[in-house]
Image (cartoon, rainbow, N blue to C red):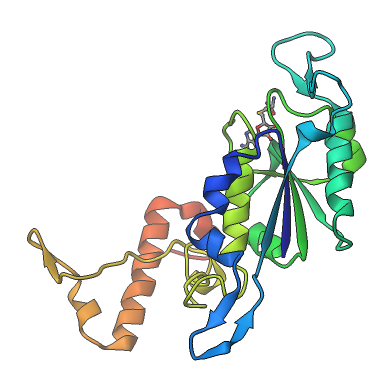
Length: 245
Ligand code: SAH
């Protein structure tokens, strides 16, 4: 997958895209059993500075809103030109995504769908947002990371990238580990069960005996029950229409 990001603050992405799982996903994958078997990276990141596309001689990309009011609005031209220039770098058509609090709230099924795309182009707004006309012209899918407002679309873009990239094949070591997380198909879109590791007793708290029993059927039943219980307690909305009790 190719991911293009358009932002006024490209430096914000360096740490996140250059660390841990997101970094590894952009590197070639070697097969430990066969040194000659090296697969290409699963993803490539291309972060573009919208400001480079301004035609304003002072490098301005924003202006006060028509009609008055606080803040600044990002202008159409730099955003539009930046999108077209980024897209022209590669013939693969891009699914355009605009990060905005007014978009569809991001959920795991949306992440799964976007993870099936060959190319994403993510636009991060700033200030009061972006002139509505360029949104109409570009027709991006509008995605929100939740019902709260951030000062810019950079962190939301990083949230989207992380959620998508960890689903790409080969990115997580154990291919099953993403499938069973909360909200995922392997967890029946409920919350995950609680997790425990060594030691068996810590500060007088014992790990559940069943998990040390080696009885896989009992363990699976216990985990399923725990997942249901927590979902009922914490997120009953996830069970709506699925449980009679
Ligand atoms: N005036 C706008 C908010 C602008 S916030 C409004 O009230 O709808 C500035 C930028 O931050 C937005 O353009 C968007 O890219 C980003 N942003 C803020 N909150 C967000 C959220 N919950 N989800 C996705 N992007 C968000």
